[in-house]
Image (cartoon, rainbow, N blue to C red; front, side, top):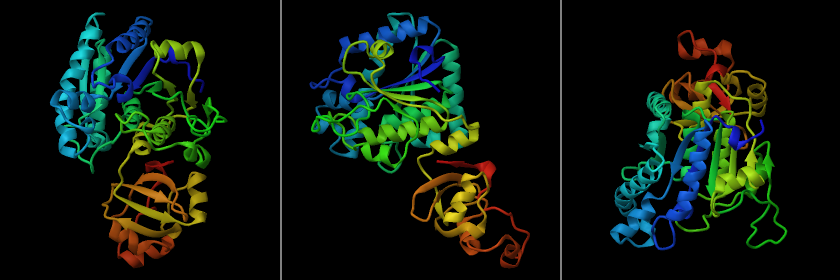
Length: 371
């Protein structure tokens, strides 16, 4: 589908730390006022807005006098986030309040969107706030997140919030104009890719992993991963520059950026599965099974070649091809130990192996989404 940001009934806008926070560690308030003006204009036209906003750690580091932008250690980052989130929320409340719009803070952890029940709770809260006319301001709860249990960047968080909010589009405001064929800072022939219809190996290879400012945690690789999450759910995503004033209005006028077009939307459960960032294990399959899955079949034990991880029935597992490439996410029909016993066996052999009437599939197609 064509991404027209002014026509999206419900839009998620993500703001990176490098845009929000200046070199001195304070909010770039004059720039933010121009963005708020864009948001107010869109809201007046009937558009519903959700903001995903970074910057709490960078702001808190300045307030607490922490070096390295508050990222020298996990303890520093958590403390900086706790102090900075207050400043961030106050700023949004003041700027939106000047236009008689209520700002509503939502802090989430990885587990809030990886657990199905908590994901649905978050989705319900977002929907209710939007219905009440508020603009939700979402951030990762960095004051309690750990290195092992966190999104790590707000690009992927924005895509997941787009899913939960049932958004019609996601815009990532960045300190770069979009995805280039090479690093434009070092290659004069680098070309901006304006439209991406499929995220393949070539697109992934173009994505770097560094953040230009040093304030944020997400680079182009995280933005491309965010695009995969969003587009799999039927939501187009755009990466655009937010450096200049009125970035949304400029994008609507110039169309300068990279737009990842959306696939046909999956059902709600499959959307949640596709966007998950954590899995409990992996089932490796052969080339024939890869073809079967891509033609809409369930994963049968005969097509599996190996099992790793410790998962129970109903846990989310990754399905990987013979080369290790991710093929799908799905809900396991067996626990890991039982799955390991039956890999490679035909369905008519399972009863003798297990001693009971087995389920035919390792992962049923109704509980699986291709990546």
